[in-house]
Image (tube, rainbow, N blue to C red):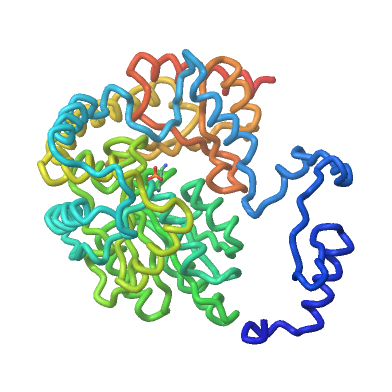
Length: 445
Ligand code: PMP
């Protein structure tokens, strides 16, 4: 006890308390023993109030509409106009059957894997990042994560002190906002223009954070942004890095949609352009391949990756080894490239179909961007103001699920996010015509 620095009198009073509670007994000349517990004699304990307890904990709940979306997506027959996932028909089911067969014929691991994830997968990812995105990432600088949302959570709790500032596009990916909020981080929203995040506002916000003694991190989705579909231009990327070098902030680049270009490849990722090692880069198989695999990656300086790998061990002890082995084959055997070549024209024709339908149904009601990749169209109502909250509920009652803009920026009251990736062309038409009718009804009610 002395070597642990516990005071002797503390120990004596602890023993007295345990004796008084009937939990230990001293036997004369024979030491101290733990009593066998008589459960019936214990005081009656209250039944926990789970209702109240479920409102505690450090995580914030999702907004009611988000909870509703997450439930309604599984309602049979619902038309999912905003869902940010590939349609089931675009997912590589046959390819994964083949890969699983390959795995079944060789030795595969059902064990835990090393903290940074399967070496075979990290080697394959390192080659993919170099070949397709000009990113030099050694296997030692890659951490495999259970979906890139885990990378956001790990960076939030493992790299940033509570109260640190995260700057992010306004609007931004909904669950990034939750991850930062629940980790007790301050957030600063920076508007976008047609070329990407606005740099004057960004450097002002970064300077303000530094003045408050805060080290800022910028979280950005440069390629086919969620929810606006915007693509940061090559020039803005260079300027953004130059601003980071002079102003001093670091960058977390979210490349979830990077491979999903439709007309021409996106400009090089920030990580490929970075001269100073300021950029952490995260990617995922969720958008281009399969969200159910729960497989993503984070690339960064080795000390950062080792630290976050250590924290990951505390949270889930590693990403599913089967998913990692399947993903290693996916990249190493050229499946990824072939799959992207197959789905690109499909997505392109879905995008064009949705743009035509918008022209037909929303010409007088709204305006929208023409996305060059990713999944999203950011529809802005230009008619008289209307309650997006009511629109959401009314559409849901009519079997159409939309994603209100205020999920991505609390103050937004004029946008909804549409996705051309999930619905069939027929559902798209039915859903958009119901949406347009509902908007008109709201405007006249
Ligand atoms: N980043 C962005 C921008 C996203 O849109 C998503 C999924 N909607 C993710 C990250 C997270 O995807 P996952 O955790 O499935 O990899």
